[in-house]
Each structure stands twice: as structure tokens, then as C-alpha cells.
Amino acid sequence: MRAVVQRVSSASVVVDGEVVGAIDEPGLLVLVGATHTDGPAEAARLAGKLWGLRVLHGEKSCSDVDAPLLVVSQFTLYGDARKGRRPTWQAAAPGPVAEPLVEAVVSELRSLGARVETGVFGADMKMSLTNDGPITLLIEV
Image 1 (tube, rainbow, N blue to C red):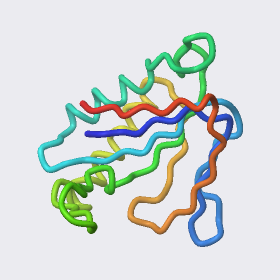
Image 2: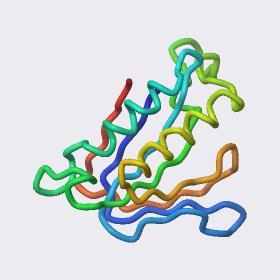
Image 3: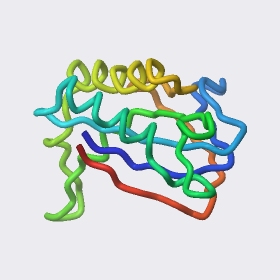
């Protein structure tokens, strides 16, 4: 699995004009993608990594300060644009495979004690965020 993690002061995701997920305090915005070989073990490892990632102020993690996470599915993280100008999405897991894995990341984070907001899988989402730092990381498990 692959995630782009941004430290944010706030972030929200809107679907059809309605806010479906938002964090109004410092935390992490996490874009999550899955590939064909990913499974529950990778989802659990990613969740653990996100919960303990020490990128908040004072080298703290979400687990240290009970900071929220906004997790949004993002199949385009597995886009490949090395050839030509049109990306290919062949490495991205199809929806029926990816959706349960993204949900597993969210579920595992919640079982660890995290406050998690989400987007809507497969929806056309509009995101707003205020980067803090900025700090942006690419994580692969």
C-alpha cells in the first residue's frame, strides 16, 4: 500500500456540496492507494505506521497527542506516467479490492484509538487543506 501524508492545520473533503469528512485541528491528511498484491497485513502495517509517525510539532505522533487523521482513498497514487503523457492505472488495485483495504486501514486506526474522518470511496471529492510546515511524506508498506 502507498500513502501520501501531509501535516495539516485543518482539512476537509466535500462530496456533492456536502462535507463528508473534516478535521479542524492539527493532524494528518492521508491519501491511501492499494495495488494488486496488497492485503490485510499491509493495511494493518500502514495504519500502525500512520498512528506512530512522529511528524507533528515537537516530533510527536497522532498517538502521542490524540491528533485526528483524515483518510481519503486515492487510486491515482499508483499511476505511472513514465511513458508518454497519459498515465496508466494498471498498478492500482480495482475498486472491489482497494475499497476493503482502505476501510481496513481506517478500522485498524480506530482500533488503535485514533480519531479518523474519511472521504467517500470512488466519489468525485473536493478537498481543502491547510498544510502545516509544509510536511509531506510518501509511505510504502
